[in-house]
Image (cartoon, rainbow, N blue to C red; front, side):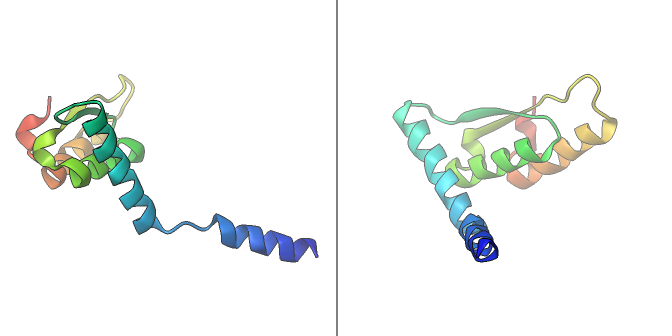
Length: 98
């Protein structure tokens, strides 16, 4: 019986990535509007978390309303900086990198 419950819980915990992404994009769009902001400024560390947030912001608001600042930690490797530079042209205007 506990195996059945466990399998049911596993099924309930599965996520639909497209649905979650759309929900997050709507959240970003709504709160940007609610807070009466023209866009967003975010820090890119070179990690997956900030890369996903940058992509979601661009999808929600567009590249002209998303400003990404490269902010690696002092102990970050050089490849982290290179990864940020590779991401920015994909998500928007690389001239906005600060």
